[in-house]
Length: 572
Image 1 (cartoon, helix red, strand yellow):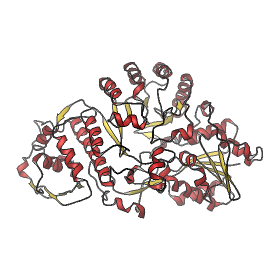
Image 2 (cartoon, one colour):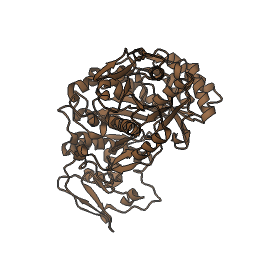
Image 3 (cartoon, rainbow, N blue to C red):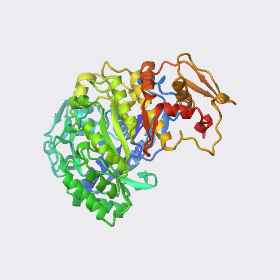
Image 4 (cartoon, rainbow, N blue to C red):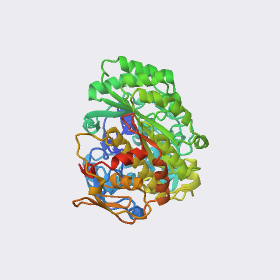
């Protein structure tokens, strides 16, 4: 029996996972090989392909007025709609050439379920006899919905290693279908689901076997990287997360020595130099985590590696001792999921971390010089525009990069049940800026998102000493430029708008490339003026810190510096 395991392309305005490593598929592949099933291949149709611009789907046309085409501003939103991954016609050719008996399709993210079903359709077009199996987060949450599609034969809910193996045994006639846990399937017009069992021992699919992957595709810079897990699951029940549906409420752990051994194998055998822990609750047991870090530090094989945890690190488990060990072991960056700087709102959402924890550990993060990203969610239930601005200004003077994400409802969460049960699944993504509560509009959400990018841009210029006047640079006086302003804008706002917000098109300003430079205002209604005004009012009395350097400048000082800077520096 020949088996293909597929990671599908996705289509969106942007993707943060273009170089993503297909961890779930690798874990299933590893377990199958361990069990003696060797005629298995992995095809990652997402990573390592040139992005293709495609027309914006009709249902997303309302976003065109916000996402300016081919915008190259340093604080742009999104400018085009893309197909990320292999072309559909090539996927069909590959499946036809491979002649598989079973195709397993990973469907991780709800907004991209259509791309997973497209792969199922292509597979059945090649041959109706091929068995199509879908697994991952979305099918786990909505198996009956997925099985309504005529091209899908089976859905595996939850962890898939053992169920997928048993399904193959069933297809070989060795097991009854009722013996395959976590399996949903069709019997004539009826959909049946077997008992769901959560895996206890996650070591069964480790150490990972990467022999079916082209490891050259997975790099950050010039270094090969992989996702790796030290545990699965999360004990908490945040209202916007559906993780418990897949893994249950229990956290399952691997022994530190086993994680170390796997890392050493991946480094020696495949040349991996960057390890990204995907744990949803890293450092659940602080003692084990510290033991793992010490083993990594003492390993000669792992000398010089980099470690990160882009899913985020829980604040409540951090202290100076842990941070020092992390730094010594290879952590250069820290990703913290703060979500909001309003403590009362975090409590309502069931978040374990809080603002006081962040403030307590923040000086230690600065002292150890981590590159720090703090994630915020814009548009949360119970919050307002002012709450989001409060969170942004809470971070504006901190040595951090702000990681904004617009709230979208995930099936299996209380937010989905309240607000999005009738919303088409493909709208459940950050880029659509879909509004869930009455306190936010698409316009205000995208304005707040763009303000976040502006703050990060200003922070990056603080890092570059961009606002510090250098003696060896000849600056043109502001009077050498010809400007046209709308009425009602004060000097500080004018300078910021001219010097930062404009490269080609952004927020109502357009650069006219003439000599002398001319920046012309034109009316736009796509951003929320009230939100912008509230931001400017506070920005002028706020301190701004860099991301990599702990330098603080006042918003008013930044405006003064910009008056003396040659505008052409923005076009280098």
